[in-house]
Length: 228
Image (cartoon, rainbow, N blue to C red; front, top):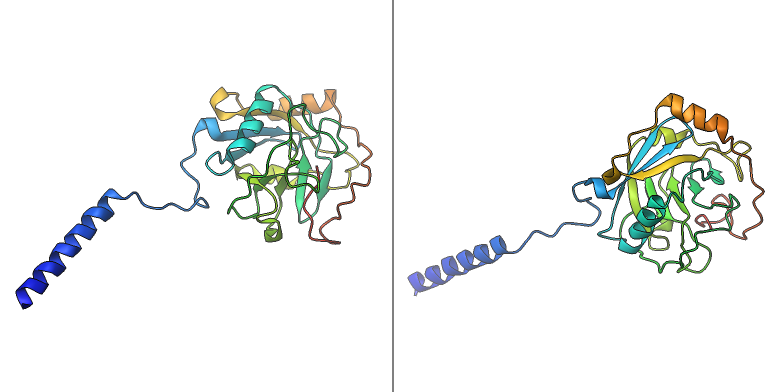
């Protein structure tokens, strides 16, 4: 009886080990997959250099596809950061510079996920309606976990966060910083030099837009994320 029980136990352990070896490990979406050029979004900012963002099509495929489509159209080039709140976030992606505009493409359905809204997270801005994200996005200066599961994070800054920190604050800023050029890593667009950025700033000096009351409070007045 003892030998039979021992044989059963050993057989069970061997079978469990074989099954485990054939089962791929479960990887949390919080842990990013290896970065590949197709999923690296580069923003050359007027603040002096390149910000590289790892996009996450594995958790927000439609938002990432929208970013890629608009980037290859040159849509984001020249857009100002029209709403920038100290300790919270910098918002851009509106061609009108007012916070009320977007692209000509249809709005996106929300893709809420488990990625946390921490420093460097890039997330889709929207209006009150959950499925109203379009082209606008924001980059967080610091954690704001109250936004989790209410807004769609689709990437995170992996280099150049120092250039994000230099973005001019204001709602709207008096002299807004802007995206000089956006590109994808797979397009092999080299970073703009300091001289090129300075020259672009001289030619296209940003003008502060007038932002209407969008009826979504700033974080010190309510736990709300940036509106579209």
